[in-house]
Length: 299
Image 1 (cartoon, rainbow, N blue to C red):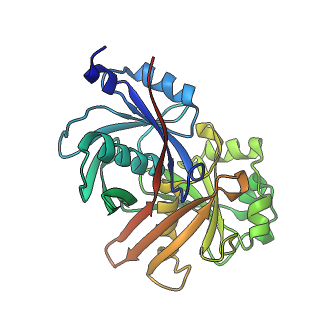
Image 2 (cartoon, rainbow, N blue to C red; image 1 turned 120 degrees about the vertical axis):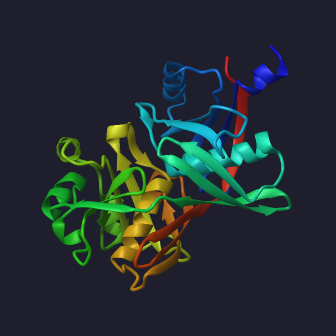
């Protein structure tokens, strides 16, 4: 096998939104130049992370690098931590020099990723997400039955609402960390809910945190995609950023906050959220660190 063929069969394991190794959300990034759709789906199922990404070419096409994202169950048009983790590998292994911005061509369109370096090593990656769209709102009694919580634990100052920046989520504001910690999916009620909704994933959050430096604690559930719980969700937190400024959760049209996720499943993660609402649009940026854990070659 030539060196070029080996490159085209390499894979990398990274932790995304991680402050140190073995925290954050795990991701497999695969050089998938010669893989079929069926092979990509099988490999994603074999890794069995929440998502696996495939770099389709080591060359720029239409201004960016073509990338596809698969869960163990199916391909998805967009996901946050796979976007940042894949950009990290492209910069480190394909471009091999500091660049300020990388574009990934995903199913939903081109996504720009900005990179800040420390001693020529990518230190924090930030992606600008698409404009959020806001969908239906949900009955709080129904959501409470899905999450196994009481209706009184939902923060009724704000709606339970469907939001999308490419992948839709149902956002559920809770009052306390106790409620977030005890929440769990009631399977029958959950699947009854999502079969009638565009969003299949549920993101719950509250203003109480484990780490006093953070502003929100988040949990995300997506059994429909084969993900019982995610340790860090860039796409979901992008939706959350849009939701927060739309509804003036912190009392302003602008946020610059730290969000923790994954503590309940022992994969503590840290995401940086910025959002700015004007009359015409909401600009959303989600950032964090990426750390390489391992690499290998597909057999």
